[in-house]
Amino acid sequence: MGFRDRREKRQEEREAFGRGGSANRFQMRQKMISIGDDYWIENEDGDRVFRVDGKALRLRDTFDLEDAHGNKICRIQTRVLHIRDSMAIEDADGEKLALVHKALVSPLRDRWKVDREHGEDWTVQGNIVDHEYDIEADGRKIAEVSKKWFRVRDTYGVEVAPGEDPALILAVTVAVDAMVHPAK
Image (tube, rainbow, N blue to C red):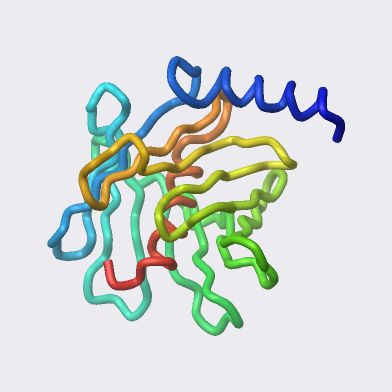
């Protein structure tokens, strides 16, 4: 990739992400103390658009991503008997959409993989613990997760590129967060 290619790629990212970009923006705000890890995901206008319903008292971590009316969109659940931590994302009918797991070799920074059933696989890389990372598909950024816009603890933003599935990207974000911060 030459200098011109990198410049064009950064220009395209600036058009979608950042101030004045065309990306869909969501705010993830977890409650400090809640039974079952329930919390709302708001859009940039402050409207509640998705709800993460954490299922309490289960043997494995289970979360349902619901729309604002309580309709289940997908289930995010820990997979047992795997060599490395992984969480499966299934649609409302139980069909597998993706498997999120930590990459085996990541020498410089945290790196996760999202093996999708339909479509190209995604990579999640950056500072995962501090909620500063990107989700990429085939080398292009499709989502950016960051706390830089918020001062409140346990609040971070997710920007989703136009044309991408926000529910699946938010489900991946919930899965990564649940695996990195298991005590929450």
